[in-house]
Amino acid sequence: MLQRFLQQTGFITAAQAEDIAAHFAARTLSRHEFLLREGNINDAYLFLETGCMRAFAYDTDGNDVTTGFYTGGQVVLEVASFFNRTPSQENIQALTDCTGCTITYAQLNGLFHARPEFREFGRAMLVRGFANLKGRMLEMITTTAAERYEALLKASPEIVQHAPLKTVASYLGITDTSLSRIRKESLRK
Amino acid sequence: MLQRFLQQTGFITAAQAEDIAAHFAARTLSRHEFLLREGNINDAYLFLETGCMRAFAYDTDGNDVTTGFYTGGQVVLEVASFFNRTPSQENIQALTDCTGCTITYAQLNGLFHARPEFREFGRAMLVRGFANLKGRMLEMITTTAAERYEALLKASPEIVQHAPLKTVASYLGITDTSLSRIRKESLRK
DNA sequence: AACAACGCTTGCCAAATGACAGGAAATGCG
DNA sequence: CGCATTTCCTGTCATTTGGCAAGCGTTGTT
Image 1 (cartoon, each protein chain N blue to C red):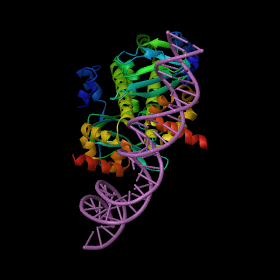
Image 2: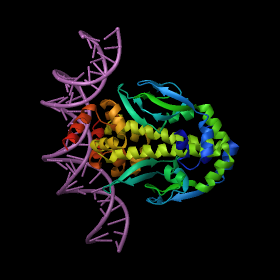
Image 3: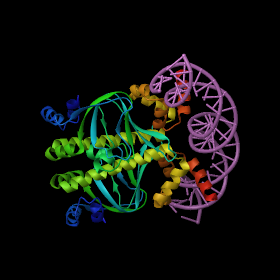
Image 4: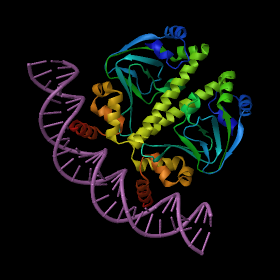
């Protein structure tokens, strides 16, 4: 699964993918387990195979705010902490039992150095993440909370299924009360 | 100014910066002039020296939505279009007369290839942009419109000064009516 | 089994925001 | 200069959302 993922951008051949994938180590997480805790440096680049996870931060009042959800086939990491080697302001936690494989910063950087095609891949992933975030921002500005909920439900039903309502609500930028009402309304149809 | 910018991450020495800067070409834009139009491929990596600019997209109802503001000392480009060589969904336009210097995708890529330290710099810029966008998203979720306005006013007063109120409002995720009222309230203090 | 913690819903009311429309001031252009 | 356009403010009213609190079922723990 990781090898197919590496090949998707077209920068990496099947043989190269196999070679690169060999540097990853299998990793499992139990439900509620943290991959990264606030204040630590994110040293694990995780390719998630099964299960789902979330990233969250605390606002100034101490409420936790979900900043991202992840499902199988995605890369899970806090970009700034990982690449700048700085303490993370975010936490990353498993919403369900998870499986995947990881590689450390040092190993990844070694591969980037040795293999230009993998470096290209890494850049493409960064650019993709950037574009996704921009899309989410535009969605946040231009659509209603109900529309955002419907979109999330359509794009990642497993998230809505496994994450507590409160968690989903903070991701959508609303309170759990509002999401509960939105859900009720969408049932009426 | 560009040279100082290149040195700020610590990856690039003064001599290297001078060398790299020599590949950029001076560029000016008149007020209202477009650097990039929707549907075109963003081929110009612009380092903005003076003036301010904005990026915007259209929502499904045809309203324009400001997705970003830029001021002197910042790099201006649409990341996904530039790096993926795909048509942009965004427009980038000068809010005031601007000066800066540009480099094309081909040239930039050539430099990335030839100079590992500049490649590192490029990655650091991407990571920084990513982190900024994440911060803005968190701000959008956790703060009120009035607080976001105050923050923008503090961080980039020249933007608020030069951009029409409607443009600033869409950036903040509210209507021009609301921003007008927020402004009125903040004057009362 | 008993209890606490969590997760979700709901009612009530207040605050924030949007939609729409009108009008004044500033700006741009022929 | 004079006209059209843009920009901004404001009033009214509807809608959305939040804050708060109560209730209740589920889950987890001892």
